Image (cartoon, rainbow, N blue to C red; front, side, top):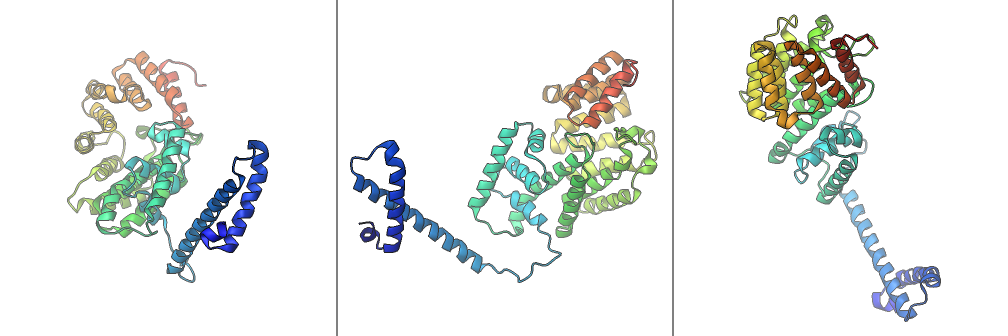
Length: 387
């Protein structure tokens, strides 16, 4: 009957055998159905249709593979990282999903690390990444670099991903070490590839400049024991002056386009720090102006918090505290807000309140190098011996 219905003798025979095997397994458990023959015909028919679908899908895959223009030997210098980066920032994905998937596929971050960056549970992030992968499969897009408007549409997400990747490498969210050099180095490598592909894109240039100017300080950010050394206390002779020079040059190329964006402004702030011969020689007024512009572009509370430090250095800690308290409704209780407010309270002479803020900040800090630094500051303020 199955053979007559479908006109496939060989397939029907195999499907009927599978149906009989299924009956032998299920009937002793579930009981013999009222119409055994009909049950076998339905089971065999379903198996035959499933086999046809599988064969059709396989043939379609084979046809696609045959149609591919695959070179006999893949060029040894071919680097597909940028293509993967743009693919993960597909317009069908939400920005949050695209960033998360790219950090996983290109950046090599664990799901837990990405979840921490987005302030969501790990299970939520795992589901988000899985859905993003499924959405990409459904698009059926070819593995190639986008062009034109499609590329421009994805660029903002690409820049954001590289920015997050570099930040995680420069100050790791967790672990003993302050840095993950391989991750920040990969972000810089990808930013170089991006600016090589888009040499006239000012924000891509601005992001590369920012990375170079900040990474130049890395040799002086930790002492011999791996403990954090704050920017004002760093030995600037250890800064990588070649990276500083390159970063300033790249920033100049970006600014020459006359379209100033958030990454160029951040790079300009980093350049002011890097050009200063000492912490005391830093032009805090210029930094205040730049942070004001950046605040206007981004509307970010984190930028406002950074501006508070510059305001404190230029106009005194009381003025800086006003800026900090203005974003308490958005950042109050976070590690960064507590540590900045604690630092400014110390500048006003309120040592007990400063120690309390820094102690709370240390309790929220996951990276052990940062945590040790905050704990040491608390002990210093409370006149306790070093542990």
